Length: 199
Ligand code: HEM
Image (cartoon, rainbow, N blue to C red; front, side, top):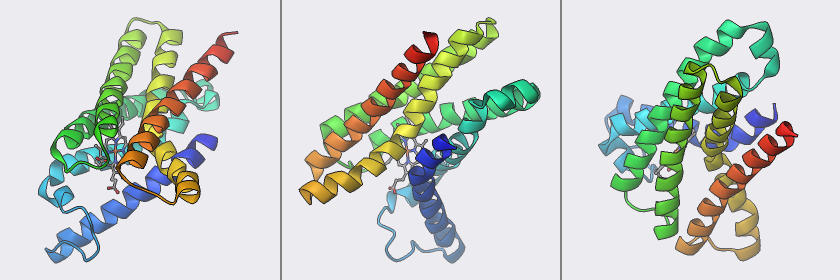
């Protein structure tokens, strides 16, 4: 439940963008107020990020539910394959978008997005390799890290509210700091969870 709640910010953002894209496709014109025309210019890339992104955030909590794993192991396996595929797609597309799209924020935002996009893909690849080798604990650890990274865009959006309330600013430096801190907060939280679980 808590994981879905944390994902709400990015889910709303994704739904908002997808509705704008659907409206644009149905009318043949970019909707008034849709501030990111490059999403239409690179539509397959954008959809390869947004649709798997939505599924990744929605399915993630199911994958980490011990109840689901124990009661319905087949659901965990089938939905896990979809979840991992979505994570790989959204991560690769996110890195390409970061490179191709007009910059939002400064160099820190750019390089941290690149770094954590690649880290997401690597964590999922390592998680898949672990389960193929029968190493369940290692698999769980890499997938916890992957989901923490995938949920970071939600943390970043939530962080903007208090930061804006205090500073009254959303400029390049604020975006740089909030986006980078958002990644780090989630990764540190994941490591703490894993450390506590291992004790
Ligand atoms: C490591 C994971 C991720 C990376 C590297 C990443 C990267 C990006 C990049 C580069 C953009 C273009 C706008 C910008 O430059 O900030 C973007 C936009 C977006 N991403 Fe992701 N993303 C990730 C995870 C996710 C997830 C899990 C979702 C869930 C749905 C998501 C949803 C979105 C949405 C909704 C936008 C549009 C933002 C807007 O302009 O309103 N992203 N992402």
